[in-house]
Length: 315
Ligand SMILES: Nc1ncnc2c1ncn2[C@@H]1O[C@H](COP(=O)(O)OP(=O)(O)O)[C@@H](O)[C@H]1O
Ligand SMILES: [Mg+2]
Image (cartoon, rainbow, N blue to C red; front, side, top):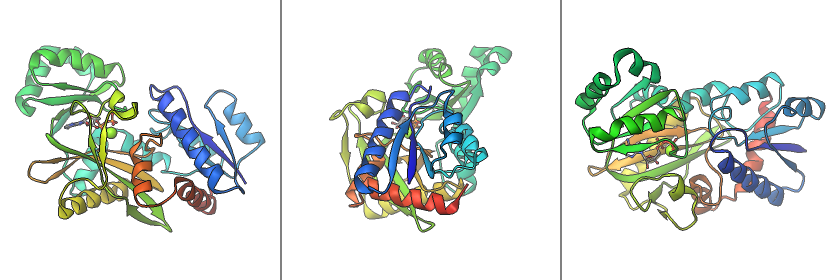
């Protein structure tokens, strides 16, 4: 059985994706010798290769645009190739942070107050007037982040209004729309979800303690820099609430196979939804594989099961 792991691509998270791809491919090879796993980057020869030698299944592990905004999944669907993970439509909803916040808000999940503004609004209305209105509404501190991004690239905490313009510029470097969101102080938690026989199951919540409070790119991918606690050091009832938020996010956005929800639990024990990832990182330091290991489930075994499910589901 031929399986193609798609990793790399042109997003700023290319290196992360390659590491995720390598990790999953190796785990799958080791766990199931009946599966022949090929790792493949995304380039102009991909479609031709997939058409000439259609694999039984593709595992898209592309982060950022193309991988998570649905485009590549739509192409796989058009080629009638089964793939592991969420449909293009669901991935697109999850990848757009303000849209995901709106949908999960309708499902009754709280996320921090936020304002999303495209670059053009600043030109049309004047940057100073717009930023004054944002600060008057949200207060400070806030975090500015690209609406479509990942790995905290282009994200910056703003504690004083004087620092806001630079943060906006940093965010616009990654995405045309910037999300300005109230900064929640508390415990950062990631809850991974996987599906087994069509049932979504949450994995033990992982507590993330980055060196400077924000789980930024270096804190994520430098081994030993961030401390993790599994399960998180919170009461069982708060852990249950976090799991419920992740399951509700997975279901209300129509996600499939696997996802990871990022949350902050405030001092009152209230979990605040930040975002949900349709293509969770799978590197050595990533949260999904850590949560899976803590539940005693080998990554290769889960991936093999999801491959079989995807093949049965068909294109
Ligand atoms: N509203 C917020 N309050 C506090 N910290 C936040 C908030 N939003 C984001 N962060 C921090 O920034 C990081 C990246 O934000 P996130 O929304 O998960 O985007 P992504 O992981 O896609 O870059 C989080 O892991 C967290 O450390
Ligand atoms: Mg995140």
